[in-house]
Length: 412
Image (cartoon, rainbow, N blue to C red; front, side, top):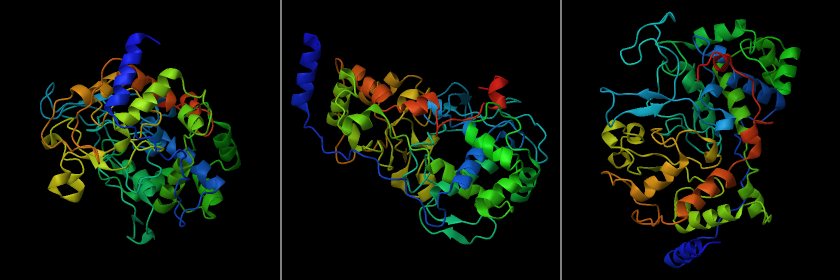
């Protein structure tokens, strides 16, 4: 270790009080009693999650924007330009479907032409949300899940993943033609050959399809009825998502007692992560507190964030604190997607301009970090390596997946 590194570490140790009392083990994912996990339901949900044919023009699956090898987030990006391209309101979002008319025919878009439309926020990781009571950057998918057709309460509490699962199916930017109905979607699903556009289908999915070669029979296996309903679709996808627990990171092994699981750099980074109060928002072991904060990334007038859902002025510009598990696999960072390197996201907290409306650190006061010397290097080593589950990175079970046709066509 160099003298400079020793000096930097001594300075850090003297300048901040340690916050070492952390919960070291992930708790089981909450499962609502109304939707218990079963194997046929999990496999059906996995098939639906990777089914491009669920989109109106057969080009986008849930998994298109949530790829394991990229931390459950989107490796693709496009520019959402707002009203005037090249200005401060531009966002690097996730590409969706092309603009369509109500019959599903392509239609020129004022901003995107005939190219895929782009969302005004980057798709978040799908893995860090399994313990949350609300979903999406603004929390609009709530805990109570209602039958979309009848309004009946199906899950009184704990159904945010069910709500989240069905929302993109009707979003005219993400997956749908305008004014798509449940009748449209269900009729289409009934006639589909499961994963007909995909290749390299994992064994569990291939076996299920071999035994039940159409969607009515797959739903029969999962729900003891061949009826395809909004509730059953939501139940299956949410069930699959609840099994994607990325809890085999070097940090998990280190906290379980394996002193060699983290590299020396990552150990320094873990200490710095605590002493710089990163843990106040990114609380271990989830590495998020699932709260909503305005970190001063952009002016609230460009994105109201949580305020658009609650109507509370204090919530202006606030978005959900993302989990940092597998953050080192992602290709873009922040809900705006404006950083293409993890190091840029780290340095933002030291050099970022204090925009109006920025919240204080929870229980930590104002932003006054001292990110000097080797601190950014060590932090990145911890985040990139210490919080990466190798099964996620290598897309091995349960994070395995098929190859999508859009990938083979170069739609990335």
